[in-house]
Image (cartoon, rainbow, N blue to C red; front, side, top):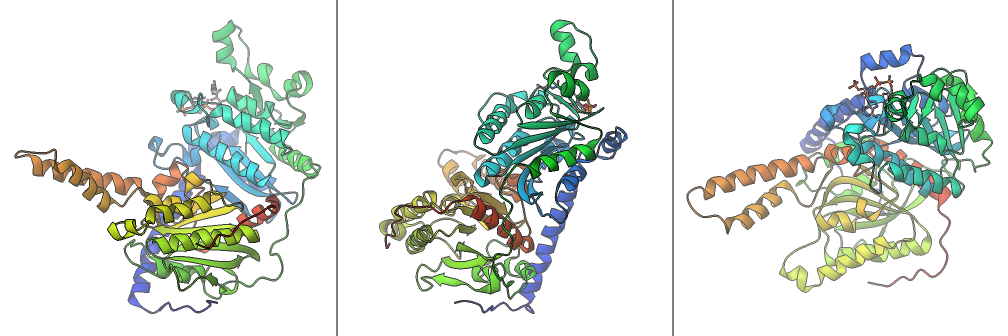
Length: 532
Ligand code: COA
């Protein structure tokens, strides 16, 4: 049982790491402020002059007082489209409404009229995926101009595009997961289908509108000249067409109505947290910054991170004397059991087999898995290949892929190459995946990529300019891999569910484990444990 920390908080290294991490957090806070700002001051003012509330205020009013809100991918689209699409124009996250955990998906009309970019659609679909997996009702706060037309080929025709959001709505509804909408603004085309496909819909008088084609489209298509209110206004839809079910005098009333509908859904209320008596970690999570730092090459003992995340810092390690580059341990977070696999160096055959064995134990005991990635990859070289690293690493990948318990992943450092696969990267559909601001994700590090590509090119280059060309290739490769392995590049493209701070990690994981405990029935049937 590990409960003792060996971190020297007074060392120069600890201070250096902490200082470096403070700059990483300052960057994160600055970028989160960008996400919250929406379309900017001018458009926000116009929005409010129309009697509309900012999207995050709507969410606050919808949630129970004191409810947590686990926001999904707030930095989607960061660094793209000249940074003009904060949060990809949609806020999504999980919170409590009338004591029930719900997925809230809310368009931000100050960002290009709430229209859908590629990342908007990815975020919307991801939020629905999380809702389906965790059996959460979906509440759509709709204020949406449909597809962002200049990007229509990126959002309209393919699987995972706009059509999939409607497919998901229908499937979830049919599976007993309520789909509810409140309409706050002009909802055109795809935007109109969100309420139209909802089980029940509320609309705000004066500002809410729904039409498959707005006035300009109607004029172009059938030469009819009509104003928006006559075509798709709230009163018409509630009293004449029946597209919406309830008319609200203003936004607050619409949100109150949505809460009232949730109250009568007959959904199970959230489990109380903590379950049983739980003790916080014995060591402060803020110290993780001084342990981890920002230098990927600087090794540290990952147990020191675990001690700062788990209940009472009580770590029950499996096979502590074997395959030491993968720490496998049973622990609790906010009173809920979890089986942790955390990298402590490169993955060898022994560590891979130990990981596979531990996953089988968690399967048998019905304990969710948590992968903490800080991994350059599996061991390479003649000795490793002769020892069967390919088949032993495959055992870890196989056991992780077929695990019958829920899986969570946090990138706490590097996530490179096949290490990303073995440790439950996005391609392996973990239930949730978050990153820390110091993480990196790519096939390989910029240094290794530069060596590989210049070596490959060397053989085909001859003549006087060869050295110059190689130097230029080296520069370009280093720049490309550095830029693309940045965690903000990743989160902008929805490769994760968001960047979280080390100090937030315990609470985020606690909420995820709570959701999974509520929604995942205990697996039955044989669950063999093969000793590796
Ligand atoms: N595609 C491209 N740009 C869009 C858009 C869309 N679907 N919807 C809105 N925008 C842009 C506007 O051009 C404007 O851009 P700008 O600030 O660079 O000038 C910005 O978003 C805000 O739109 P605006 O019309 O000023 O906002 P509004 O709050 O008055 O109205 C809508 C919002 C959604 C009702 C209105 O913009 C609209 O009807 N959009 C077109 C909807 C449509 O035809 N969709 C079909 C999709 S298949």
